[in-house]
Length: 520
Image (cartoon, rainbow, N blue to C red; front, top):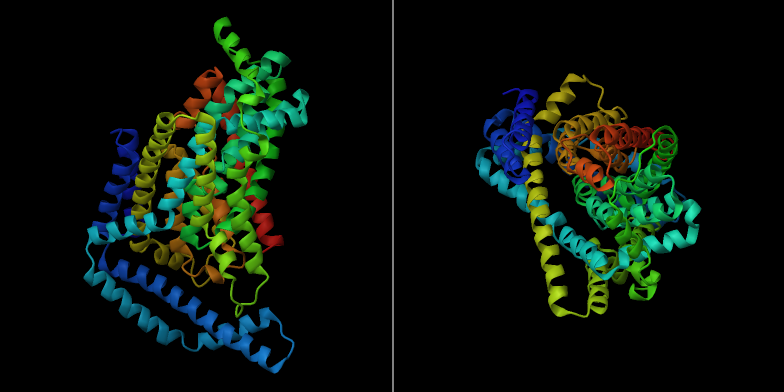
């Protein structure tokens, strides 16, 4: 079957199952994987796996040749240019191209003949869980403990006290930007929106600005910065170092948030949206804002579970970037900078903080139980997305689309293409995470050898993340959370939230393409 038609059938089944049959995304993605996997022809599967195996062999061979070249110049004491050495290594590998293609073809034919559809699906499920399962579980523990201990509220109050009431929108935006790295955006919004309303009670103005500022900060890290599942999965699939993904996501996310804040200021002047709460509810909000700081943990200990994994992983990434390929990494740096270790240590700190503040074993156990239950559902959806993505890659869609472009391989054009594909899937079914899972499989098939791109693969990950932002509407659960909790009508939410998030997504892809050109 034609891979494009198979892609449309698979997407149609997933979207129809979620939107029409109201199935859980896990079941919808598994059904889509079964359909795509069972209808993929042996010829297309062989072509797809040959492309993958050849890319793996080529990258490994170039790396080995480069290390040999580098060792030689080190032994001779000559000056060298890394770019020239890498080019020489690629030329030496290119003479073995036919040999590697034949080996990749044999391996691909063996794979297509010896594996069943369900074996490929379970392999995709297990491979995805191996990459991100522990990270998601620990991230959920961190998020739940930050909420239960009052640390998240303390971070927001700290930001407010630092910038002052006049700059409250900036404080809410920065707080949600930071909190949405380990905590899901929906949870962050539910936590902070009462504080935003309480702040309005003091200011008596700019309510819409406060709400949109909160959304502008939190929604972008949800799609660009690990360990949130979407960007975490994309980084793993593209082979992007987690530290590099974090740093780049924060940088591009800040640009998107800045544009979102500018739109929020404009919308606040154009639309007069009141706080729609009863007097009794407003009284409760005012009481919340007056909760003594001594009942909350200190600011620095509240920030530690959020910042520690970022510092450990990013620090190890910077350290490795200063090393030569022949140099070894100190075992302590390798251990501390491992993403699973860093997140687990942070989860331990957050758990200790929650135990100290709650001082009740039953309450603490209940919070951890909720975190693990939440993590289990997320991991299931992520793994099903990985299985669906794997079957899409094996359907031959990558080699098929590449053949349509002729002899010119996709390079810079892959960035806007990945953005558009993700945006279309997001608009169709509502979930930014599902859109990223599906789009990265398509993008990965179009670029089997990411090392041949003229830019770092992290920019492709950013393009996919930014593509998951445009067109949030009534099929998105986040749309309803924001609408109901803020008191805005559906029309008001579409005119403000939807337009702002879409504008931020387009800003992100523009900044990404500029960065890929200037800092490849």
